[in-house]
Length: 103
Length: 200
Image 1: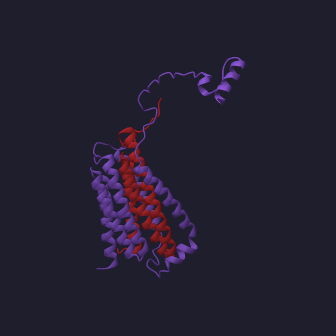
Image 2: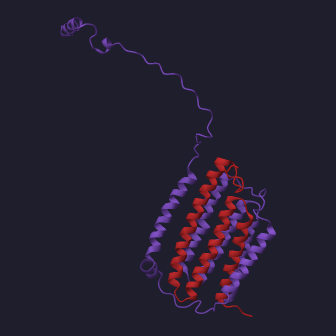
């Protein structure tokens, strides 16, 4: 069975998305959460470009992918800033240890 | 070597690097693997004729984000091996497999047509059809600048975490007699004498 380029790209998108979801589910380190989000968004970028070309409008897919890349970078910046400030305040980056709720 | 083989090698490399980024015990190693994922994705995008997006992904994903991650690791610390899983790993694997199977079932039902067709100019799509995206990108970049300020800002100790506040000494009020300020005191007659002295 020979897969077309679209099907190969789709398999890559699904694989990256699966690895990102798995990493997001198992990790408790805030930096690794940001890395898992990066992997997820890379699969989204790939999917947008692929969908644009499959639908015959690659320009729109690429412009949306550029927007997603910018948003992805901002998510990384804000997430890392939060991680650094949480490390300074709580002394850890464990997501289960940073709650201040009582009761 | 055909385009299918190139796709396969690049995407398989991206998936393997992504898995290694998630399972590495050191976060710096994870960062390096994430940069490798960015490079593989950028090469895949380039081979799909998305040249501008490939360049943006390579410069931002493999460059800027890697630098930010390395800086954050230098502040936070490199070791992540002592932290366990949020949920049990079998459940995580089951949820991931379920999501992948559902996505594959929905995605592969689409017919692959016109995968590498004619490419209209990106300039028209970006600056005419999707001009709202450009404005959103400007707002996002501004938010990113604020995020970098938060990343670089020194932590301030809040009042609740600060030490016991020192008790201030009671203020002493020194009463200055009105004569020291140049105002006359006493009876009106004495005041008149004082004014004459000042005139003299």
